Amino acid sequence: MLSPKAKKAWEQAGSPPPIRKSCAKGSRTIAVKLCYKDIRGKPIRLCIMSVHMPHSGNQYTDDNYISCLHCIEGIIDQLDKNTVPLIFGDFNARIGNSQSLPPETAAPLIGKFGVPETNNRGMLLFNNFLNTERQFCVPSTFFKKKHYNTWNRHHIDYLILPKKHHRLVQDSGVAARYGVESDHIAQRTIIRLVHH
Image (cartoon, rainbow, N blue to C red; front, side, top):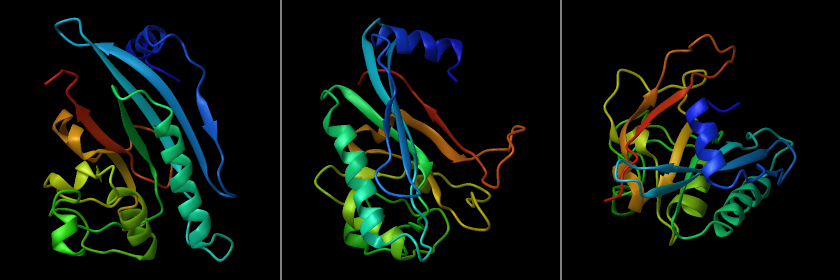
């Protein structure tokens, strides 16, 4: 369901149908292309993706997880170079913060804030998606907040976007539940829609 502004942005993008992918059992990805105009009337193209990655239970292997990351990359490969991918979702991975990862590689992609705990899926996400030649970052780890847990005392839900677009993010962190019934706490991100 899109807000009236988002619906208008979707229409300005040509009303493309959502991209739906299921890359492995227990996963799903839905992407919607939007086009906003900044205050000068220049188009800002976004691709908003909602992902649910397989958890680390016995039925989902690391290969399933990596396959899902490649599926997301496949969607990104279909976008034109002027479209900014914003990937929101339950990554079922604890990425930690820059103190819990190798500092020489983590610093530009993962901030110093957040839960300082990394698990195997967090390392798979970091090594096979974030720290690739595309250079993706996790903005919520760059903002100091009271707490970061999004599920059962873990931080596993993120916004991920290309590092080159990190300045669009003005704030990111967990939000109040806003009446949504879920065992996860929503991630709230404020993005400035303006060309640099």
